[in-house]
Length: 347
Image 1 (cartoon, rainbow, N blue to C red):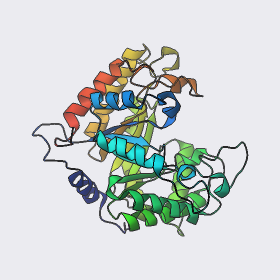
Image 2 (cartoon, helix red, strand yellow):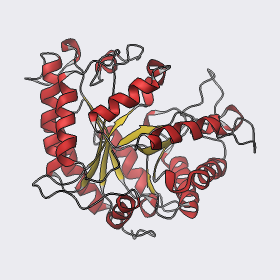
Image 3 (cartoon, rainbow, N blue to C red):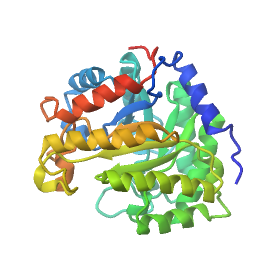
């Protein structure tokens, strides 16, 4: 399938130039966009935004993945009534700290949700995908070049109510609206991985002839949470096979990679001795990402531990403790960023 937008490689170069990236340093290490995912511990960070921003600056990361304030249920609580006050504050704070945003769009409001059980609407599909597309386009118009990367929902194959067809339709309609507002924006899907169950969903998703998602996808984004180094290498290879199969010519962003620091939640042989094992895991997988020319951005999950997480393994995924004390993995990632991030990024 042919992409209807400029090649993703040229798009990424345009984004970096627009953001003030200068000529990369003369070194063996190639440039990579490096970030952190703040999504699942917003409650943990409540009232500590300054500390979080200071920690990210100390880390040296240039990107943040975040949906807080930008969610549909936050900006259009009632049909046609738009409120960007919180979103404006979030984006302004990130820009003040020279951080670029991977904006996660989702959060179906109750009035638009296809399901109404339990009062939770974050991941439910909307009754009418055109309403979501209107919201996505409104966000892109409102922020313009201040947001250059968008993610459409998160992991729909794991959420109630989603089918490959309704997600393909929603993605295509939303991508069109975002690109109408900002032709240079990068739009990615809810995340891909290569377990048998996920592959069944993804193959069916890309086989939808009514809504050919491959034509509107600018990035193939992968989720590598708790993926062993051996599996990480295999998945990176499978991602390139996947791209060839569906005639994609887009870069890879790993917008989730993580490993817990609690021994009882560590499962990789030789990597079961707590925080030291987490740091060694980071060394190994970051080496794999840097060695794959298709990988152009990486995001660790998460900045700090989240003791409120439902899954036990998620509670120690941070590279810092809840009181912002760095773990050994923090220093590993900091050194990696220093070696691979372009100069002239504004910090």
